[in-house]
Length: 242
Image 1 (cartoon, rainbow, N blue to C red):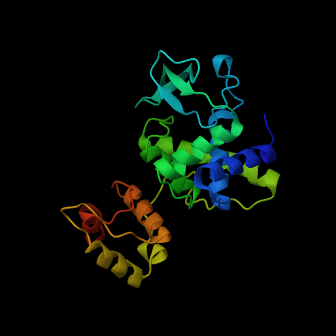
Image 2: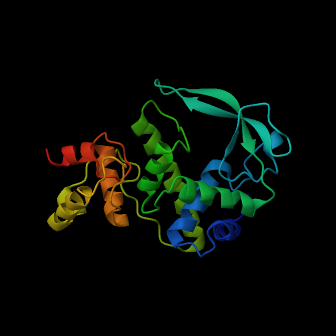
């Protein structure tokens, strides 16, 4: 497998190729960690997947696969009893490692618009946007298993590169509803409520919240059985005001 140092260069260059700017430390750490978790930096594939440089286990649709751009491989679907059912699907091929990393960055931050504020936030965002199905009997188990695996990969990366770990955000534990007094001051909650009143019901537009506020709101929504989209809609406000 490639070294963590080499993989960092690929992740950095892939990100820059998509966004035309330097990534933040958290942005590049999560691109690299996803590539490590999903494919061992593109080198964990066997048979037809060898040399595909598919860093993020990115699928390309149902078979038959176009051998010029994809390969057939086995994936699994989790069941409610905790078992998994295998199925075959096409996975993408890339010209090289930088292109493979670039697609991970594109999917995470451009397509899914995930905000890399913590390990838990990234795992939840990836699950909610169907990047992975995971394994385990329940949604919570699948997300928590992903959090544990992502944390293990980030630990290896940060130890090798001498970097700080990303914020955990409750990694490895069953997410619990945060204490509003810890996540927001009273003035911030009032600001959140006030901004929500700017909602245009006909056009379906909501006021944009600051990144930290939105991340905390997503945690609150997830742990209260709401759609974790960071939008202070009617259902979320109804829950907050109970």
